[in-house]
Length: 465
Ligand code: HEC
Ligand code: HEC
Ligand code: HEC
Image 1 (tube, rainbow, N blue to C red):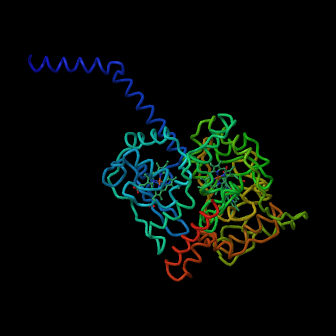
Image 2: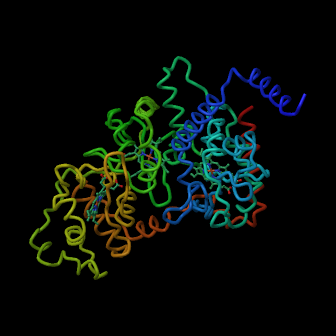
Image 3: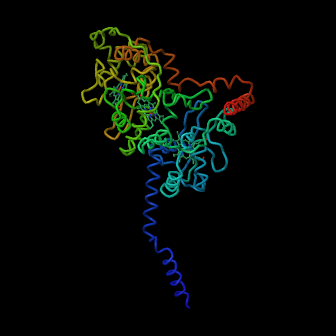
């Protein structure tokens, strides 16, 4: 037999063996897996954190810093680059990083990587996600732009071992018995892929989510992720359709607009979800336990009339903005905001410029989102429009931001309690520092902190028994 013939026989044999799966079909199924993996990556918003910071940065190349209360934590390069990314991760190692927060080299990841939510990801989803990252993402052979450098004791990654023992669930995702397919899909999207709780559930003093306060609102840097349970103090008066519209477009007329971290989540993730998935999220949110949280005290008396003549007699022009001594809220409002939101805060008829009279950022339990929106502005692509509001953080002093926010709260929200300069200072520099960070400095060295962790662990284990 000559070589050529041998080869042909072998080829014929192989074709006989594998004939059942023509090459093309194998390709389509891989392509379908890649597509499915990409959808999961978008729903889980992997790209929001694992991006480069500069404009037109390469997808998943890392470097973006997450300002955690413990310091800046840098998201890794998760492209399939063998040297700088996760190119040499096996599927098992990938699953462990995503679900357990343990990298291939054994490093404990910080929970800035939301593995506490992703732990419930199904094997099927992990598989599709892995195939997508290995075959559907371009390798970027560059180290992430920055490095994580936390202060002692948080720089010791091993402490996460103790934390994981306490707060990481290792149970797989469980469907609710008797729950519809839609309800369970909604639960999976909210709790696992969309990781809504990482922002909307308050955290205890060890920075873990408090399960009995599920989705009832929590601070997020200077922002506040509001109560989204179906209570009056949450989104109890939102219809399912309004929840879907908000997630898809970033706004619901007469209720709310998504700015800051929620604006980003809408732009990069939620607006791409299928209608079925968005409906499932709404169905789940409508029936989670309603939790009552504090609301701002609304005065029954109408706010003092603004003397429009005083306000528009030239003082409300840009010149008073530049003058950092001007802290008349009415003047500032009419100079800086009224051109879009209207003198009465009524907004425009088509709601392109929203009304401020029924607006969750204005009348929320805290003025944080109002203050942050004024400071940082708002730029968001939703599925229906691109919206943008200028940032005033450079132009206005914190005293002016406090003054204009107080004016907006009292005039349009009928909330008398003023916004103070101290509050604006705190929120603009990243919010209240949580217990664990504030007190760790006072403990005599990190040793005490680790002992504290172990003690907490023992307490918890005893409680469980
Ligand atoms: C909220 C931000 C955030 C989101 C969303 C996020 N990650 Fe991460 N991820 C991080 C950060 C930060 C790190 C680095 C943590 C550290 O250094 O301890 C990380 C680390 C990782 C690692 C370890 C890589 C290594 O070797 O350093 C993998 C793998 C990973 N992420 C995959 C994913 C995937 C897949 C998704 C989407 C399903 C995802 N991440 C979503 C923030 C995020
Ligand atoms: C990265 C943090 C983050 C994640 C993740 C997140 N949110 Fe939000 N969410 C926020 C913040 C902050 C606001 C306030 C935005 C504003 O007022 O400008 C908000 C606002 C909202 C609102 C409007 C509430 C109101 O009263 O104005 C709804 C509804 C909502 N989120 C639902 C969700 C759902 C559902 C998910 C998951 C599928 C989710 N969010 C994930 C941070 C987040
Ligand atoms: C150039 C027009 C423009 C100006 C000027 C402007 N805004 Fe806005 N504002 C917008 C747009 C657009 C939105 C978002 C609309 C949307 O999401 O659909 C918005 C949203 C808001 C929100 C909701 C933010 C949130 O997080 O929910 C508040 C509050 C607000 N503006 C207050 C102000 C105040 C106070 C000023 C003056 C200091 C101001 N705006 C100036 C256009 C403007």
